[in-house]
Amino acid sequence: MTEPKSANPCCPLFGVKSGVPPIGIGILLILFAVIPVAIGMPGLPFPVTIVFVAAGIFFIWMGFAR
Image (cartoon, rainbow, N blue to C red; front, side, top):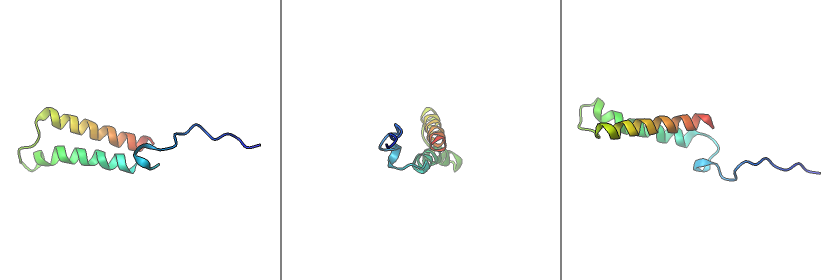
């Protein structure tokens, strides 16, 4: 008799089992928020920059947590 398969979802987040896509998205979000400020260009408004950096950190964490 065969054992039932575990209750894993059939499709992982972003279509792959590794955490590489969310980590890449997180790095891009952080870079888009920080680089304009670092090179002296007028960047995004401060609240938007904070949201981008926070979302980037979340995506990186989500990628490593897989």
